[in-house]
Image (cartoon, rainbow, N blue to C red):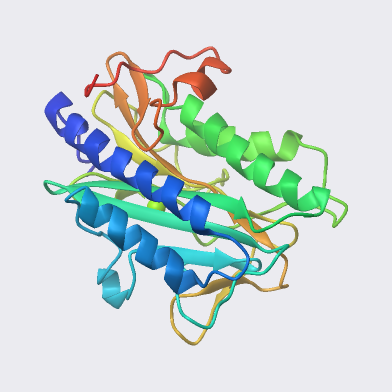
Length: 278
Ligand code: MG
């Protein structure tokens, strides 16, 4: 069962989404050489408190922090700690969330720590982010869930291959419904497989978190002994980008983007829905 939201509920999710965007901005500034991933969690806690938002990550299945900090070969679900000190040349994916009045927002980005990153890392993050936008642009009335998976996968496969061979589209994790809970039906794959049908029709009030994860090598992952940290099985570095999006009568609204997705969706010839918060 997919939870369909009213315009009022989408407005609440937009509030939560803007708090997530504020966490992104603050953690991005703090992700510098010498900072620990624990420092970044402190920054996130502060922003959530300033906005009167609750954390959806803290305590989720026992998760001990308000953000996930995934460095280099860590794909997702890295736990902030004092031992992990960011170094020049690292890449870090930061996944953040917020709850306002019971409504959830969830979004992630990849940042470059310091300078001098190899062009293939810059391209990895660009391809991952842009595949997310291709997926967000497929959030259209009349489409089905599979059209989003198809848009993400085909964007990645259209790009020039990295020197390492091929991009790995991580298979074990994907996007999800979001609303009165952070993770809801349906599960959204970042690739198309015959084993899955076309999925539900996209109708007004349908909300998703769209989140491709891409590596410079394998599509396969392992979970470390802490039962959270997800790494690529071949140690290849990976990128993770995510936005929460609502489909409305007037088109998609990217809930966790400051401009509601206006600028990027325009590149796909799509007009973002008006911001319910003005
Ligand atoms: Mg998510």
